[in-house]
Image (cartoon, rainbow, N blue to C red; front, side, top):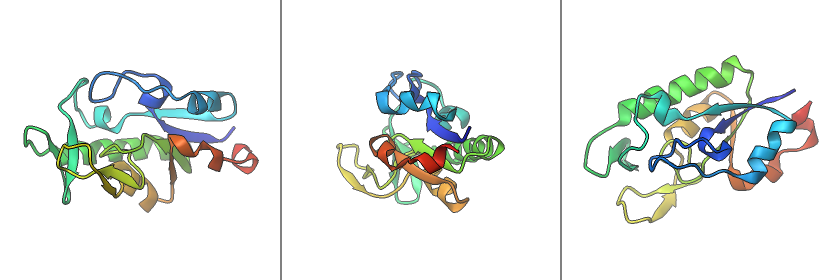
Length: 148
């Protein structure tokens, strides 16, 4: 069975910055077809749940209160990558818009809810190591060839 790394919050784990989850029925349904490797890079990097919201500002990850937490995000991404590689994942389904897991669009660093083009820290690292990343709205990109 093929392994896919998945953001834990999409699987129903309450690990988001606000202490909640965002279970995604389409993603959860994949557990019957794939070996799901749940990851939360923020928690893996040592950040608490709940935690102060953070956004990417330039090349740094900054909390709403101005604290730079780039090191924690980078550490969490590296640990998540290790888990994904150890489990043979060459694909990941990560939570959209997140400064860690966002693919294609992330919040712009102004904490106003404005989106901009970009990828989160974990997405960048995964893709640099050849792991294809999609978000929870793109599960239709999975095909029968991925399940073998």
